[in-house]
Amino acid sequence: MTEFRSVFKEDIASFLQIREASMSCSGIKHDICYLSSFDTYLADLGLREKVITESTVTGWIKTLTGKTSSRANMIIVIRIFIKYIQALGVPAYTPVIPKVRDDYIPYIFSDDELDRVFAAADNIRITKTQPNPYMKVEFPMILRLLYGCGLRIGETLALQMKDVDLDGGILTLLHTKNEKQRFVPMGQSLTEIMRCYCLAMGVIGKPNAFLFPGTDPSIPMTVRSARNKFDVILKNLGIKATNRNRHERGPCIHCFRHVFVFRSFIKAQRDGRSIDDCIPFLSIYLGHDSLYEIRIEA
Image (cartoon, rainbow, N blue to C red; front, side, top):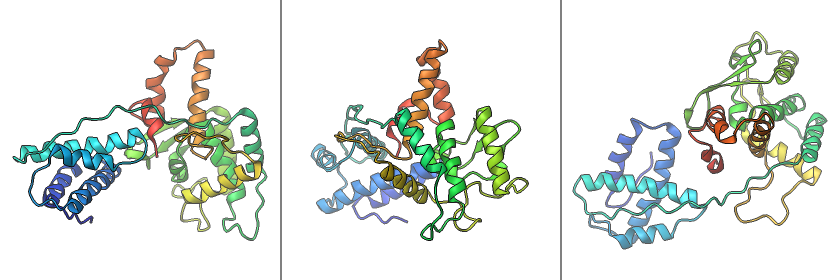
């Protein structure tokens, strides 16, 4: 349990108890992180009286770093907390939410880069330094799920056989960001590839088996392992962002999700559908309240 140090430590603890009743675990973790930053600033400032002036809030805001969207999220949480202590009779200044610039630039793999990445994944060699004996079979399937369904890597690695409907071609995602559980349909060709994969891994008929086990079959591959393997592939292929801007992400395994969105829009245009009409459906498919969330994912 996080220990707060400022004169508002008891108020912060009470505020978080109220928030826990209506928020997800990940949401509470973010609140704790943001409030810890604010609490530390107030404690280091030596604030002894329960009063929050405009200069105090402004001073804390000046210490914030990162993307404008990240800073805005922190300020929003502090605003809510300030509204809470104002209701308790505490004199406090309410900060203005800053305008969020669209300063995130995703990396989109070219067709040539995708071909090379898939070819490299399909030809992974098992070496003495590779502790996971399943990596050669697993990784090509992982990348195809990311590419074909726009999944997050964490959602993919958490899949168990009971989450896969091979007859209907449906994935049930239970362990997702912000706990937004959802059903994700696979295309026919991807479903057949998944069927062959499950047969090869011997997990059909084993509902609790992880689709992508680590060295220990009872534990799924870690996100870190998947990212490291992908980074090695990119390095070996010489794929990297040149002249990258400050907020440009650069190539990484999460970029497959952006490729999925990009290609979904292209397909919608070719089929004569309006992109604006597709956004609500695509947002739900991806597990978002709005497409804007895609840009601010961790």
